[in-house]
Image 1 (cartoon, rainbow, N blue to C red):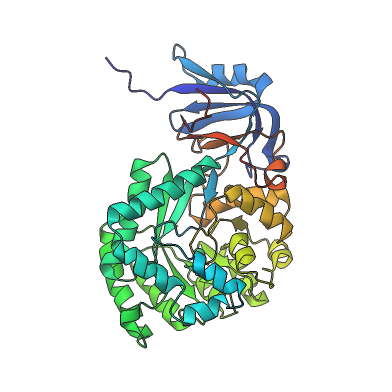
Image 2: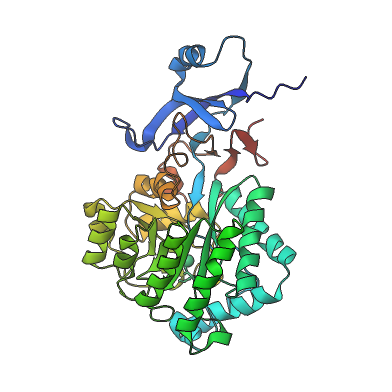
Length: 422
Ligand code: NIG
Ligand code: FE
């Protein structure tokens, strides 16, 4: 008879950075010679190797087999969480990169009908299978750099059917890859050409479509792009009301190019996160602090658009707003698939500490997805998602850049990837 009880596993010989926020935890949750006990897809215990025998004896029921796995001195961190991506799209915008280098701005290109709209045309023309193949290849690149959980937004379909197709592709990623996927509807990303001059009508349509996508199980959260080239705070609020009516959490692309007060509005709706935030005001910071909204910083977009206004990191830190870091992978403003590179940029460009940056791609990223009670930390009861690195100390993950340090990941207690331990 097959034994269906979850396997017990001891992961030995790692340098473990738990990133746990339990009281008394040292910086990074650092355990230089650590061990992890997992039971199926959960962590049962984490601690120093010299306490592991006693812990296992106390936790594992007598007679149960325990498999040993050698970590061979790898640095072990929680699996990285990329909490803001636009992975599902077709086409390339490399030509816009050339235009921008000749002097055109991101906003000018968008106003001339390029930008998001050009990706919408390519995405609508692609089959669902083609979109899946493209998105899966991108997801594998993220995974090769330590990612075990990813948020995937729609936003390049902009019609009832095309948005649903993109969300279905995102869900399929979660079924077919060893990856946890959270989906976000970003139908309020840009005005599709068939609604030119009728932004309010388009927002009405989005509010009508949302219940059907939700009923099909396609939506974990709802986002919008609140900006002078996209939607106004009043239009954004209508989308938030539709989300609230369905019990769905919200998040927002806010204050990326200008201060439109989106962060304060999102905070009033208890937003999980406000993202970008280069032009965030003091009022916005205070509102986010009160609401417990995560500031999701996107250094890739800042860098790639050659922005010069920094997000107010010192003020966010003072206000105690948790800061997360993500790739914002998309073809227009951040075509990167390396979350570790974003850690480096968060430090060099935004002046986060290496520990803040790593917490931003693990513990705080989990909070930005509503997964803070189960993901993003190595501690008992949490998901057994961890990444293994060729590095001596966690500060090296933000310090070294342009180098692939990830040996592999363990996801839901199972080794994944060519170099994962066997
Ligand atoms: O997060 N800001 C809006 N959306 C994306 C860019 C989308 C695009 O240019 O295709 C972002 O940066
Ligand atoms: Fe984005």
